[in-house]
Length: 391
Image 1 (cartoon, helix red, strand yellow):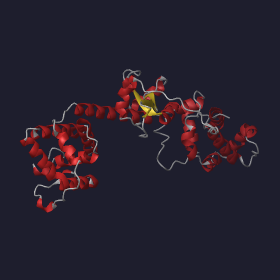
Image 2 (cartoon, rainbow, N blue to C red):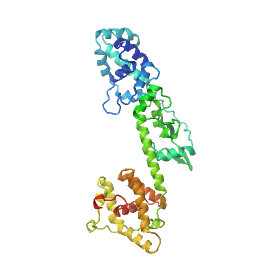
Image 3 (cartoon, rainbow, N blue to C red):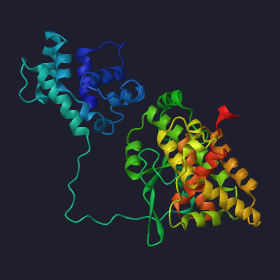
Image 4 (tube, helix red, strand yellow):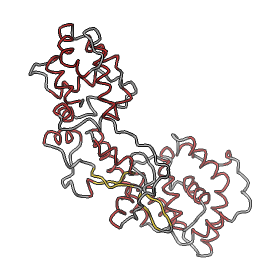
C-alpha cells in the first residue's frame, strides 16, 4: 500500500473535517510515528507544506522522504495515536483496513495499524542491490572546460561533505561530481513560494548563479526531494565559496617581490635549526595579542618566530644591501594580501593558511615549512594580524 492511499482512507475516519487539509493530516501522521531526538530533522521547518500535500494527494511518492525518516520510526507512538482515537473510530478503522492487515482483529487495531504504517515507510525506501561478484568498471568522464569555473569556486571539494570533486588519472583530470541546479526547476507555484520564503531564487534559474558541483552521492540525495532549508543552506554555501574564490583571484594577482624565493631556498636548505631565542628578550613580542583566540596557531607562530625570525631578518638585510630585493615592497605585498582576507572577516587560521598557499604558488616553493616560517615572520613584523592594542 502506498502512503497516499493509507492517509486518505484514514483521514475519512479520523479527520473528515474540511478544516484539516490533506497536507496537515499527512504531517500529523508522520509526527505520530517518528521519534526525532537528534535534532537533525524538523518536520515543520525542513519539509515544505507543499510536499506534505503532494504526499497526501499521491502527486509525489515518499520514496525520497522515507530514507531520511526510517531510522526515527517508532511504532509505539503510532499505536498510542490510534488508541487515542476511541473505540468507535477503531471499529471503523478495523472495517476499512482489516483486508490489508493480516491478523487484525477488533482488539489489536492500534498494533496492526502501527505495523502497516511502518511497512509503508520501509517499502518506500530504495532497495539496496547486492554487489555483483565482479564490479563493472565505472564510466570515467574527463572534466570539460565549462566545469572549471565552478570547480575553482568549490575549491575542488564538495560543498556539503568536503570530498574531492576530481582526481587525475594518467595525466587526465576525471570528474567525481555532478553539476546540479540549487533552486529546483520543477516546482509548482505553491512550492516555489515556500522555497522563496527562505531564500529568493536567482533571476535566471538556468544560469551559473543557480548551479554548483556536488559529489555524486550528495548530488543524488539533494535532487531526490529537496527541502526549502536544504536549498537555502546550499545557496548560502555557494555565495560564500564564490566570494572566497573572488578574493583568491585578487590575491593571486599580487606578485611577490622578486628575490624572496631565494630566502625561501635558503630556509629550505638549512642543515640545522637555528638556536631558539629566549622570548623574554623580545620587548615587542606580542603574538599572543595578535592571535588571541586560536592557541594552536599562536603556539605554531611563536615557535617559528623564536627559531627563524633573526635568520630571515638577516637574509632580507643581506639581499637588500646587494640590491636583490626591496624589503619595503615585500612588506607591502604581504600586507595587501592580508588586508583582502581580513576585510572579508575570514578566521585567522584560514587567513594564515591562504597566505602560505599564496606564497608557495608565487615563489614556486615546494617547502611548506619554509613558507609557514616566512608568514610567521610577517606576523611578528605586523604585516599580518596586527596588534590593535599596541597602535
